[in-house]
Every structure is written in structure tokens, then in C-alpha cells.
Image (tube, rainbow, N blue to C red; front, side):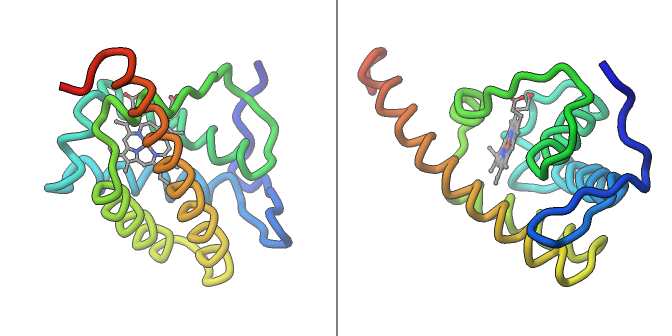
Length: 143
Ligand code: HEM
């Protein structure tokens, strides 16, 4: 597989530019905040290797924004989130901290776009999580 992009490599999303460093700085800071958050540190206990998680999620967003894949990765977020106890309240907290982190690192234009995208993805995850829950309970019983 290829090397990670250079720090100053740019990606354009809806006319808004992001450097690789912008994405890495946000993700690195965000998961630092998560690890000390009184609400979110518990559901994130499954993460054993934080530097590895940060690398994975940086890659996830880089590729989501249209960048070339540079790691072997196969994301399977719906079961992971379900078994981590994902729900609307945890998502609200996640988004609140994420948006605060965006504001620390990025321009208003970048913040507005990434806020929109992450909010939409969160809504998508709620729907997929509800569906996964239904399927899981019909197979395993709800009690
Ligand atoms: C818009 C909101 C969110 C996005 C875009 C997002 C994105 C992701 C992605 C891409 C992964 C990697 C999945 C994989 O490796 O297959 C992941 C893992 C994970 N997420 Fe989220 N997530 C969000 C919200 C949350 C929330 C609210 C929680 C709290 C329960 C959460 C907890 C986790 C956990 C525990 C993992 C698994 C880490 C591991 O052990 O590998 N996420 N997330």
C-alpha cells in the first residue's frame, strides 16, 4: 500500500479545501478529548490501541472526503457501534465534542461543512443502529 499523504496534501470537498494535516489534527485532538470525557470514555473502553484507532479514523475521513486510500481497511461500523452501546444521547455528546474540536482547528467554512457531514452521518448511524437492533433482537430474543 502507498504511504500516507504528505501533511500539506489537499482534498477538496464541495469547494472547501482540507489538508491532510487538518484532518489528522482534528481526529488526534478529538480522541484525546474522548479518552477523558466522563460520558464517552466508558463506551470507548474497547479501544486498546489509541494511536492505531486515530490512524484508522484519520484514514476513514480522508477517504470519505475523496482522498486516495493508503491503508488496508474494511470498516464495519454498524455492529461495532451497536455493541459499544451507541444511542442518540451518546451521539449528541460525540457531536458536541467533535464540533468543539473542529472549531479549535479549522476555518468557519471548513467547520460548517464538516459539521453538516458529521451530523448527517450520525443520523444515518442512528437509523442503521435501530435496524441492527431489531435484527439482533429477533434472532437472539430481546430479554
Ligand atoms: C457521527 C458520529 C460517528 C462517526 C462518524 C463514527 C465513526 C466511526 C468509525 C468509522 C469507526 C471505525 C469502524 C470500523 O473499524 O469498522 C468507529 C468505531 C467506533 N466508534 Fe464511532 N462514530 C461515531 C459516533 C460514535 C459514538 C456516539 C460512539 C459511542 C458509543 C462511538 C463509539 C465507537 C467505538 C467504541 C468504536 C470501535 C472502536 C474499536 O474498538 O475499534 N462512535 N466509529
